[in-house]
Length: 295
Image (cartoon, rainbow, N blue to C red):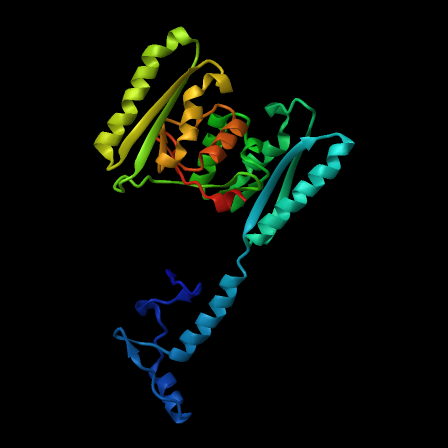
């Protein structure tokens, strides 16, 4: 049976599906002193049955439970066990506060190297991720050390309807950019590699961003910054530091990918907190910044 779900969280039967009582049923109602059922949308409906069904299905809808996975990794030393136990408790409390009734913990105990191939519990979560409505973890670094792999995974979760929440970096959710809204935009490009190989590629990447703004949006490109960097060390991203110091001039940062800001996830998140603005990556989508989400 097809149903429509309304804003009151109970199932509403459409006109063609409402209960149509028989003639004998109506005659019994009249004998018992009840008024004959009114006619709605051309179909005779029994209000009593409809109200009973509404109350029953409302109770059933309220019992639907949301399930979350909690992922954490930590050193397998005895000293760190106390710390990661506290972290898991915070994550469980966070999930409960957002209405997730059931949680399952995935915990990797690793040595100091934190190698990806040793994260068997994370692989176990990935193999059954479709069972969960959300993933809770300490920060995005726990997804992957590298920005590209991290956001590839997060975008895959989002496409599958799995929300990602972190204690330190807020929630992850990208959306379509407001192309028709007049915004003050700045663009940033960073090319990784030996300097002698960067000039031509960097120029092409720089040309794409102003062209996109001019042809596809109502934005105003206020400034454009770019760095040539081999390892994205602080001293190699001079223009990025200048952009951060001028952040009050802009509504939005435009980049090719989140990895342009930094290739390391932890460093990327730190820079994002310094920027405190929405970021639109042509390859990844719009990630809005909320100071409340970072607390």
